Length: 462
Image (cartoon, rainbow, N blue to C red; front, side, top):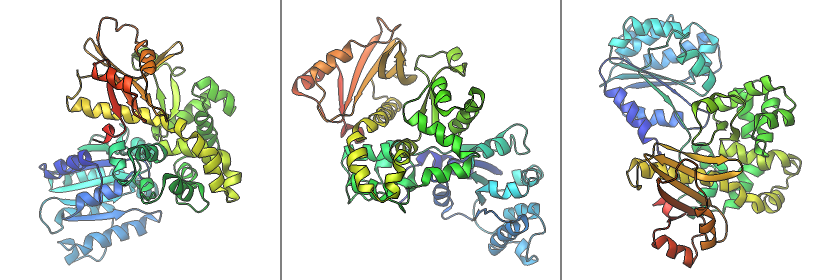
């Protein structure tokens, strides 16, 4: 079953239906579902789907050429192999079939690194004919920084040729939950907090078993599918993984400011800033500012907070990395029972805020809120903090997110009502409370009286 990606599929279908040649660049981190998306799109269409591998340039060309020639067409009548890449690209336009002929080059960086003239060859073939033919070429890659620097940047041959660029993000919480339909709403949220929206990770959980059993087997056990996943990804994507390991570890442990990260990693500020920028570009770390921050504050490289953006990396560096000696000895059950499970509520509370923000964005797009906001995020200043603040025209929505085992009470509401964002005095104000464990009777009465909107975990999936 293919889950989600309706917007991306719609974009690909629009490219397919458009007149003339189409050149699409699709990229995103490993395991995010790029290949499955493209295979779903190609189904029923005339296409060649080729996954590049780490091999010689001549072997790569021969393998792709064999796929193209196997489809038939004019070239197959008189050729057993293509003499060069340009001839192979041009032959795609003559493949038999209805509609656009599609060529997907999955993991394109593997081929281009072996032949650095490949983007130039494709650019020449495109400019001198393919752009006017009924073809669609898709360049797909997991090496995100390489795709941005070597395909999309202004100094490269293919710059300006792409008719669509798709950077594939992880799935949102709602689509992620569709992998685990038997789980309760709370366990679906916890699974999203642990695994994020990466389809490959979500497929490792079995919703016929408990959350704890899944975590112990897939993540905490030696030989588990996800046991060494972050280390593998860092080695694949980055040089000097030891420094990246250190940076992610200290952020996961609570160091969020640049000077704190510098001090705890013992890496000088200039170097650690570069490492952090690379982690941000990969979607592993994000740099966060208060929702009302101005452009000047956001431009200051010494301001803002660094947080782990990838849920699974955050879980792994919070619970697996610090406990590797015990896990290597085979004590997955003990680490779960005595370390992970007692801290899981506090751990999930931060991703729970993001789930609530996603819910509000869905409601905003559907015009199902009291006003349409144009800015949404977290707010903090001088020790004061609000989980969610959304701004419209002279209107503000404030949100409180409570992922704990007791219901939200009237006393909690009074504390929440004491919070406000400076500069919004006199604005139309709406308060939303998101609670894992529901609401006490007096809090429900206050919600019925219009003091706030109560949203439980079940509501997040309606």
